[in-house]
Length: 415
Image 1: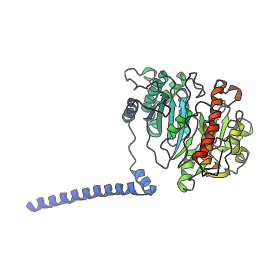
Image 2: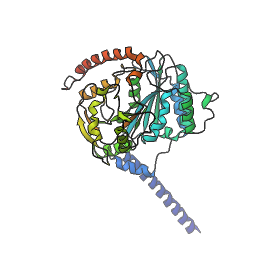
Image 3: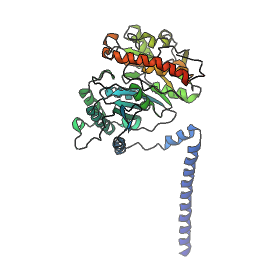
Image 4: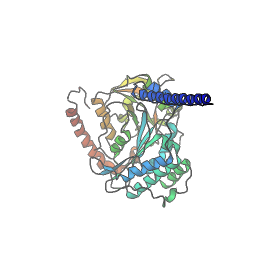
């Protein structure tokens, strides 16, 4: 009996030692993973042991924490910034889609979630106290009912500095109280929103587009910064990830994604063949074609549409930057921020592209990917009430170009 008892004790001691050894080896493995420069080993590990998705309660707690902070003022003191109403875990080598919108234009987010399979970052501007409250309630509803929002979207809020956004009161959830699905949230937003031009808000508050762009891009390595009413081609995120993962040669390069605009009545094209069919019959045209042709002309659309069809996404030709080109692009590394003195309409993206050029970045146009803006932009309909602000930005742009000479004294490039 004593021999049997001793054998059992030895067996349990051996089993316990084996379990402790396995645990120590796993901890050692994880420790080594964190220090390895090779991303492949980490990817393989997390393929079998994926991180737990954030729960609805965790996301709501993050929202409450961000709002309770009271926000921070921007450099001008005119705006209050709430970072991270929603947060997303992102691979540092990933490509983030960064965009901005007024509260009413957030309904476009649904289409972006369908087309862009990677992480998104959205900066929302609320021009009034009521809009700030709607933005928080809407974020609360989206985080509750939209798994994709919880998994892939970071959201930030900006409002005039004289307002503070409040934590939604669970006892008074308002019109979003009875919603039970993600689609119902977007359907409700479509009914209560009045979408239009972001910077034609009908208030005396200037739309801080460059502040919003910087906020959405903050912390990202590679980012594609677009307007919220644009839609990327299908598979663009995957193509970019594969291309960037295969080579590190794109540092210092802005990978240009050609931009188009489409009549509102048309279905959005998913691939280049569909786009070209609509382009040939005039249902799709280059972005800003009727408003500022030189702003997009250097993309060289005639060359792009005649490129041979290819399966893999890649840069197809180099384009030297010239004023006033304002391309949409993907770039990583030390990308200059958008100058936040530019607000409303005019020169806000041109100025950043100009600095990108002076800072030494080259521009290469991608062969297959593209962006499509919903609707033709027409000069006669294009917020004439903002002409005074446009003239202010034009003067500021001249000053900005002079400032670049002092900022980059050794650069042989200029705007």
